[in-house]
Length: 111
Image (tube, rainbow, N blue to C red; front, top):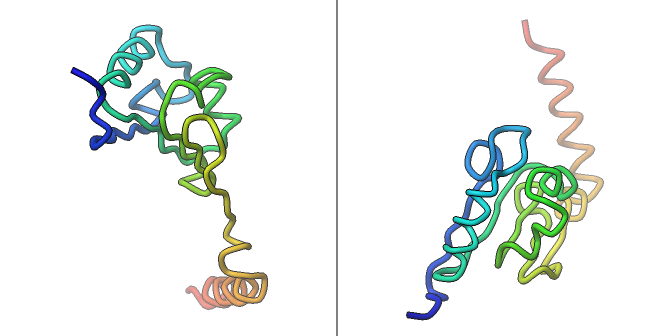
């Protein structure tokens, strides 16, 4: 039976693929390779790529079909950048400044 491209299994790094702040085990790596032979696999993490590479290895982009760092701000497919953005690109500097000022006023008014 071939790979089912209609199924995508996404995994978090900390606490799922690896213990928090640790490298993943050879057993987990082997399990993920087996699963990738059957369905599409991906990683979604809040950390930047460098931290995720520290846990999953420098070649982690090649271990999964999809890879999302910084909660999806940067996405890879088959080891190549698919899309990348930032809150500044999305909102613009003016709206960020308004948001920061609102938050600062809100905090200043807390009792």
